[in-house]
Amino acid sequence: MDRASGADLCFHNPVLFCKIRGKHLAEHCKAEYPSPVKYCLWILAEVAVIAADIPAVLGTAFALNILFRIPMWSGVLLAGLNTLLLHGMQRYGIRKLEGAIGMLVMVVGGCFFAVMIKASPSAKEMVTGMFVPKLNAKGATIDAIALLGALIMPHNLFLHSALVISRKFPHSFEGINSASKFFFIESGLSLVVAFLINVVVVSVSASVCSNPNTSVESKAHCKDITLESAAFLFKNALGNWSPKLHAISMLASGQSSTVAGTYAGQYVMQGFLDLKMELWLRNLITRCIAIGPSLDQWLPS
Image (cartoon, rainbow, N blue to C red; front, top):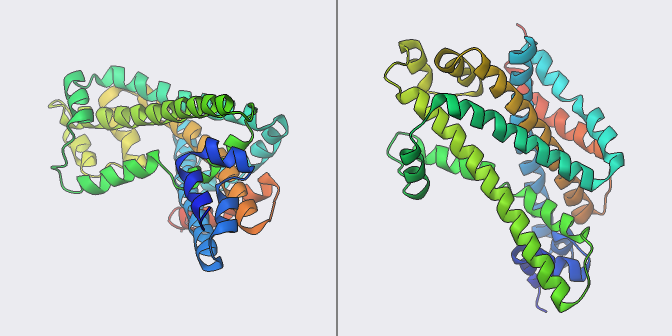
């Protein structure tokens, strides 16, 4: 087997190769790539984890502000305390955490689907947009790339390849084929659910902003929709209850992102550096780095 082929095969078929060799993607990268490449990959993976944690911190802070009127700077600090929640959950094992993440994703989807029913976007335009996308508006290309990045985050490649190793199945041709099939179904369903949630989010915003009865003030917010302006926009267009559902979905999304990012970072660190750290400590360090830029603009003057 030539150099780096193990890492390449692990990228393309993590069940078939990672399970047979008993190593996950980060461990293959360490073993088969030269040191400069290995350390560059490690740094990029760590940066990806931290970059994904910043929106989770901000989303949690916005959610707490909407639900409980907690100031943003306090919400950012409180977002770092879910390390205690993660520390409490890890004793129940990875399967329980996987189930918890699935439940949180369902909460996110349920909240936005409820908002979508009220917003009543055109089903025909939604289906057309999914299969015949258009990028006519200014900045649409950047938004499309951002949505793609929200669906497929690079550090999750390391996480999924590590989770594959924890699966139990016979080390036979039929067993590996069966595991590959189920892994394909599991990954496919995860991506489909994430895709549908993103479709709903975009459709709700587009429906509200294109409604001729939308107020002038709401139209102004449509020019630059952020986490803060989205809550105001939904409240004016859909009613007082919609920002609450929006906040609950952000809170659930932030927690699921935190759990996934922490485990991904742990496997990355362990694979590339042979360094294992307690999950709560790993999450605390990541959060402290993410809190810096998140807290800067919200500190009271």
